[in-house]
Image 1 (cartoon, rainbow, N blue to C red):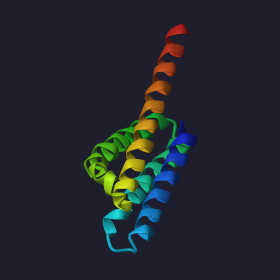
Image 2: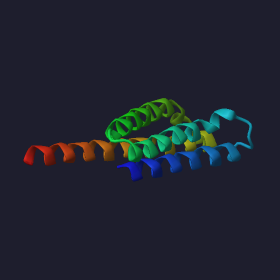
Image 3: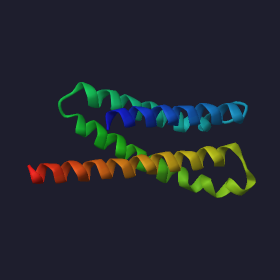
Image 4: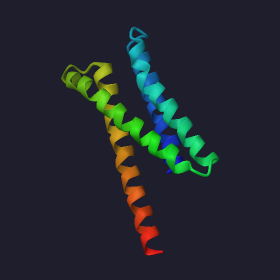
Length: 116
């Protein structure tokens, strides 16, 4: 799960940077997905380095859920085709996909512990 966490962090950084460039640097808030991705990516690195890495993954999943919820209101402008709305939609999709993978992973780990 740590590898997926780092990948998601990288994708969010790319969304943020591309969104910032697409708005010609007019809105610094376009970098919010990049900041979110940076924090999630760092938590993915931390998860590999410590024994209690699951806590870092839990934190990254909580941040991803907050990121998706925070980006959701801006998706309403997707009909206009604005770069901000597109970046927000991509952020929501990536974050919710990551949360779904995390929930699936933790459920599988719990089942494996119960069977052992």
